[in-house]
Length: 139
Image (cartoon, rainbow, N blue to C red; front, side):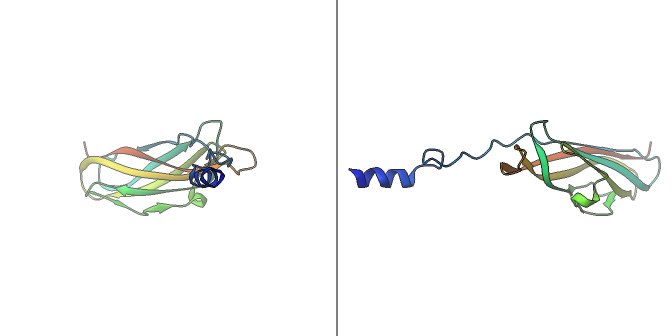
């Protein structure tokens, strides 16, 4: 019977086996906004990622994952070093795209991060959030 108990304990999930449970992932919120253009040209967009006050950023990056055909991203990925604002709970990037022709569509960006919920940054988990921005060129 003792052998059976040890075997069941070995197969048990970590929380049952005495190991600490994985931290609950904080909610990462992301939003994006692009300035409309009257004619084709360079368009500035802003991507912002926010964590609740109970979590802090340990690592983060962003990427453009979809864009309309009339918009050409100047870069596809943005590292943490590229962020214009880097705070414990907030990160903001400036994103530049080129509008090649008149049109209206949606730019989709993804933020990936490692968020920690303790001061020592030992209880960390990966989080992902997508943001969509309306892009408009022309009247």
